[in-house]
Length: 346
Ligand SMILES: [Zn+2]
Figure (cartoon, rainbow, N blue to C red):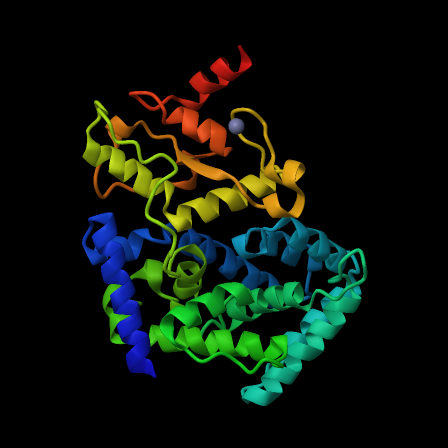
């Protein structure tokens, strides 16, 4: 089992290194840099808030809101409702973490019990459907902050995709969310124990000292291989004065899933409609659920300034609709966001 996880991880890294035209070491660090940093910044603060006595639910809430994992619009509404129950929420969290059981089936029971309470205290949809999955996400953030050697942060779709890619067995169809949360932690531990992981993400590096947080970052930000066609939104490569090489680098960064995910999470926090920064178009507003979370990422650093191996931060990513993105790239030279906005407003 561990052997196939190891070869799946190595194979994925090699494929990615080839398409990025970077050595695997560079790719390994670059791929989910922002996702990993967010976890190393946010989880220790969540941990501190959880261990504080007396427990302060507002301080805990502020800490959790720094976690990108909890950044979705609907998660935030349900989470706030839960937090606003005050002492009820505090008690349920205390009951979850106090003397957390070592033994697996007891751990699952403990988590599932917490999820039932969280549903009653706010994790449900306006139609009163239980959102155990959302509550499980919160539980996983609590547990990975306190016990990172056993837990990872969790959203089922992400880990299931990764398990499928790695050939790792998933829980039975009727499994509870408690079972899934425990399973995701075990899967992350298995990845952490492979020789490939230890070679490329050595826990001796202080930025990588907690494997569960690194692997969660990778899982959310880029470890799941992209099966999409490699074609960028506009692959037109005719006479670019900046040179084809730099232009390719620019497009590769726009497709970096970690960056895009990070930029979208930030964007959603600023604007739940995720409007185009040029023309204001919102996919969710126009297309309803189909368009939820949809927007394209544009890398704003001038192509001429790009260097191989340099880092890109989420601040360098503009969120634009497909039309505007296409227009930005349609000329000989990419337009600045402001330039296109001026044209749009004329
Ligand atoms: Zn637009």
